[in-house]
Length: 104
Image (cartoon, rainbow, N blue to C red; front, side):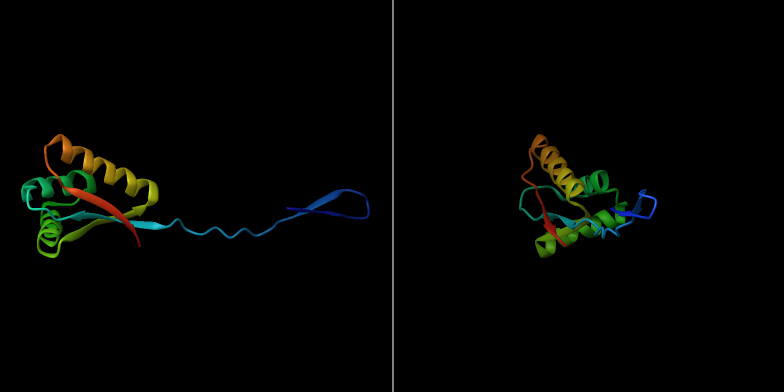
């Protein structure tokens, strides 16, 4: 705000318009491997990305057939957290499932 002075020596503040841009978005992507069971991938998609059985299966098949599949689009912090969660549960379960994020 910029102060302006009027005749009585009081201060009047003018509003400055601030431009606020929406945050950058990131895709969370699962990558195909030859070892992680399809059922585990479906479970991960349902649990961490809140997809129904049909959608999770479709994403899993996309990962399997095309090499990668998008599970969701989120802000940076949410996407990074989901990547960490997927990698952590995969390693704890003994699977090499890879998860990454890429800017939209």
